[in-house]
Image 1: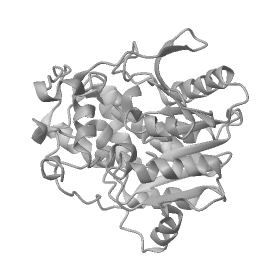
Image 2: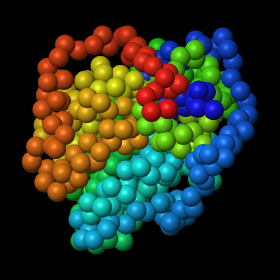
Image 3: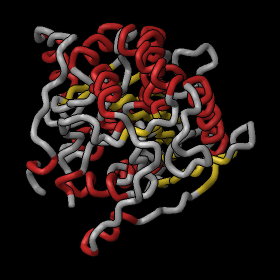
Length: 360
């Protein structure tokens, strides 16, 4: 069953620049694929976990949200934004460990994803950024006096980059960006994507359009859960693909104006955000932003077998942002930045398909 875990659009960010010509040749589906049913041994991977609360936004929109309460003394509360085509369940493997460190985590669905009423539609970067601000203020009101942090993965990291560059950014203690989808694809690819989105906004991409596989994480239990989770989007409208490209471009422009303390984490095996894009982002970030490099990390840093290193670094940075990171990732980041940059126009390397992952 797992040999055909085709990487979702969330896991193909680095391919957007090469996508348009293939779409023109191959065409796209017009309907969503059926929900896959896990075999009996993996039945739990297909469970639908109801939200713990509904955050009510100023426009009346209800946002399904999962909460992992801190155990023992509450040291911090985090608003965590998931990646493209993902959902509030993105934090299932890491949130319990953060809770054990005294961190309460709120994980809302973003508009157009998870269990939102507009599932599958692109809400627009401005709306998503405004939602993040409103949600941060709601969480702060629920936990007065508790330090508030923002945590964003991939697309969620791009949303938070835009948010924390705004003059009306919420008063948070810090922002943590996990493999943020922050880079410019280039005028040509972005123009083609906009034209395709205008001509056929409801074309669906399923991941089968490209004859390659990439590895988003090396923990097969986490990958199975992502695949069978009923909240995961398995087909992405062209409108959303073009919208994501625009969000990434905007976040790249906003990155130099990122406000407040921040920690940016990147994995050495990330095949989705290419190394030249992350190197360019790191060069443009304001002084004082901490860089963290996890050599064994994949794009989904908190769904890989090395996630404990990322979790410990997050918890340490929250407890004392000036101390060295437990993983040694700050030293590794300095070494990585000193290496000659990869060619920015070459695609990132394609490593083993998911079939060949250790631990399958």
